[in-house]
Length: 99
Image 1 (cartoon, rainbow, N blue to C red):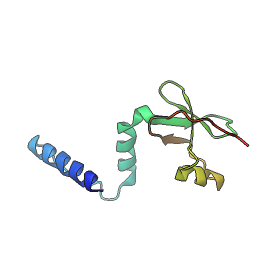
Image 2 (spheres, one colour; image 1 turned 120 degrees about the vertical axis):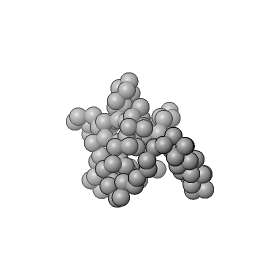
Image 3 (cartoon, rainbow, N blue to C red; image 1 turned 135 degrees about the horizontal axis):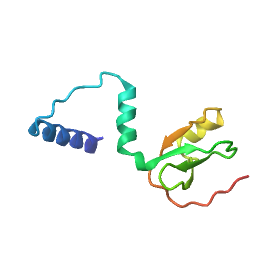
């Protein structure tokens, strides 16, 4: 968390030096979601139509990706909530063992 605070302060100083007016999103979570999605667009993926095994494909490159079992989204999907799209960190190769 300390690193997050340091980066935030560095961005604030840079914006002020460049004359950029800073304003809060004031709880507008949609604005935050749009900003994060724009920043990590290369890591965006969509649920494949008619996917029964939770397969997503990356927007760039159509690479098959899956939600990792340690992700909170994985446990949510077991309870019936399956996101139509998600942002993922750069994929790591891992064998899938479907039972």
